[in-house]
Length: 232
Image 1 (cartoon, helix red, strand yellow):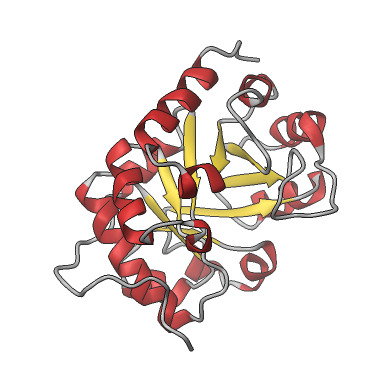
Image 2: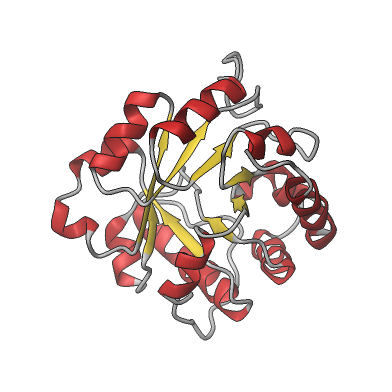
């Protein structure tokens, strides 16, 4: 398995952010960062440090191309940076790596959530999955998910050729389950008011966070757009 790219020098590791921080993530309107290190024009961990310093509501360390050992190595470094800035960090795909690192928040693709034994799910105070239909949202709730990502809402470069499901879909998901729902896919500052009016707790941003030279300014623009929307 190739090592994560790029990699930082070793050093002190910190425990992930406290469970209370994860709980706060899902009780207030939130802008989330979803990572993709292949988009970073500069050093990935340096960009993560800048993003964490900006103070988003949380981040999801996605990096779906990595095997478990490489993901765990990278996750230890990202958790350390998030801990320093008191930003909740949600790990992705690998429950064993998350448990080994003491992480209490995990995001799983729905097939992996289906396969996870109930007792293993209970180890995570925040357990999320992605849904692409009302039926999947209801299934995720029944499986014990504590939040959902609903998408993709608008056309996006990571889903070429597939049209976005739109704000009506988002509103239907939000109405169907009592869980916090975060919109994902092609969302911009201009479309955030519609996302909030559809009932979403927040929204996820990937390429913008990975490529912007000033994450604090970028986050401020997003938060201002979301906060100015009329709540449903």
